[in-house]
Image 1: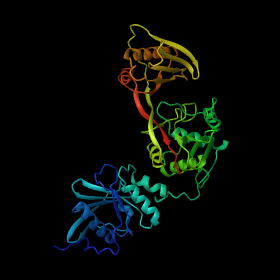
Image 2: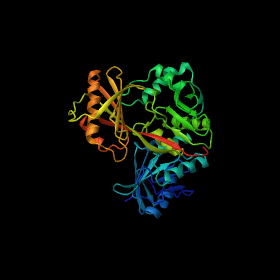
Image 3: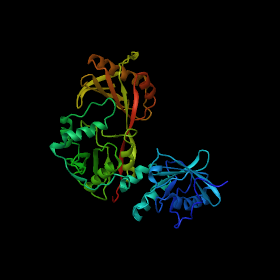
Amino acid sequence: MPNRHSPAAPVALQPARVFLEPTLTRDGPLDGAWWPHSRDLRRELPALVRVLQDRLGPVLRIGLDTATWDDVPAHLLIDGCFVRVSGLSSTPNTIRVMRGGQDGFMLLVVPPHTAGPLAAAAMRTAASTGNTLSADEILAPFHLLPGSSAAGRRIRRYQESDSAAVLALVDADRLPGRPACTPQLLDDALSGGPDPRSGLERPRTDVLLDPDGQAIGVVSYAAHRDRGSGHILWLHGRETLDVVEALVRHALRGLGDGVPVHAFAADPGPGPAAPAALPAARRPVTRKVLEHAGFVARNSWRYLRRTAPCALRAPASPVVEAVATSTPPGWWLKARDDDAAAELVVQEPIGCLCVLWWFGAAGGHADEELERELLFHADALLREQAASETILYAAGDPEPSWALFDVAGFTQIDNLLSFTRPNATG
């Protein structure tokens, strides 16, 4: 029966440019990359299929983003075999090659007219073992996505007129339960805070402007006074990949090549990113950009929230003492005469919101009854202060405290990370 949809596809005039992930275990979002010579599928697909069949076996179906190509045939006849072609409009900049059913391999598609060095770099990233970046996340830093050109953007020092735009950027990344950043908190962060971070020079804060002069990103960073290391203190860019990438690159350049750099690792303070650590789940783009730049993540805090008070069982034999603190204003709850046991800092509520800082016990010193009593005393203080919502930052080993946090009504919102990049040239 004749093929009424399309004639046999002509042989491609140029060989397919394909990189495949060596193990083909399909553990990541991509299994490799393809750099076609044109947007003509009838010319490009035959060479691609032939290369892939040598590695993967018979290819039966192709799924792709139809908007990317000049014409999408329903099927192609390649070497005497029909290959079905269909749309996958929800996954732009990719092509899915299927051997049968759901047995598919996802490849990044690099735009045909990309410069050779940029295309090769994007393909190597997509085909690298352990890659966790999506197609858009790989293409955006090279400005290969439609509308992602950095032309007209510039970075300059923060000015007072940027305050409203920067506060909006900070608020866009705010964790549930965190109060909005105020102009006073922003001013404190810009100056280094009422209690300047020990050993750091005055922070430098710069904003990234779009071609219209609007602030689309902000980064604050500071070097140690001995110039032996530096800190990226906080940054915000609405989790837009090329914006975050530009901010990180700018900060690293400002801190100087060849020195260790820490990111989101300064002591918790009153600034817009308090605590300084990065919410891993809610800011995945920033995390990936940092790791791609050579940073290594480590756990810092766990962020939990409770929106209703919870009455815990009163302890049988009180062993906790409360000591008033001024930094932060509130109370320090700890076991009497045991500096290795768990402890809890209760900040004075702001309105109906209270913040708790939980420090787990040193190794071998965990005491479930003590931990229960710490939370009992904290709740008693909160009731006296009429606090109705609580944020808890927990550090240290979560066992056995984790079950207790559940009983006390807390829900984990995110895991907070800090980062370090050892000596390296950016």
